[in-house]
Picture 1 (spheres, one colour):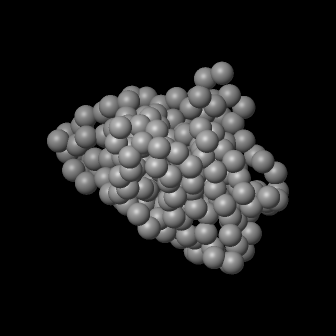
Picture 2 (tube, helix red, strand yellow; picture 1 turned 45 degrees about the vertical axis):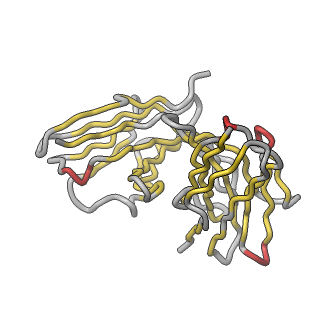
Length: 117
Length: 113
C-alpha cells in the first residue's frame, strides 16, 4: 500500500525558470494539501484541493504559484519564474474524509526540496 | 483564526530521561489535535491524534498526549526517551469539520546516548 508519492525529491532551478512539483495521493484519498517548509519556520499551509476543485488557497502567494488536482493524474504545484526565496521543502499530504465535524488525518509525502540558483 | 504555539524550539535530553513537549493552541470551537514527528531526512509521520473522548491519547512508539481543554493545551509526553527519538516534533490543530490544519513551528529534540 503505497503512501503519498512526490517527485522529484530534489529540484534545482535557475531564477526565472518554472518549477513543477508532483504529488500522487494515497490510494483512495481524494483530498490533497500542499505545505511549504522553511528552516526555523515550520510548515506553512498553501492550498487544499479535491479532485478538479481548489477548496482553500488562502496560503498561496498571489502571483507565480498555482495548483491543480485533475480528475486523472497527480496534483501539480507550479511555480513560475522562480526566485531565490522560493527555495524550500514542499510537502504534499493527502486524506480521506473522516466524516462531518472532523478534521481529516493528513498523511505526508517525502517532500520536494527546491533549490533556486 | 487558529494558531499553535510550541514553547521549546530545541530540547536536549539524555537517554532514559522523561520528555514533555508543550503545545498550546488558540481556537474557541471544537478542535482536532495532532502530533507529527519528522526524523532527519524523512517526511512527517503521524504520532497520535485527538478527536474526542478520553483526553489522554496514546500513540505509537510509547508517546502519549493529554488534551486539557481549560488550558488549551495538548502536550506530548514520553516516560523514557531513546536515541532514536531524535527528531523534530510538530503539533497541529484543525477545527472540527474544517480541513485546514495549522502547524506549530516545531520542536527539535536531540537525545544524547
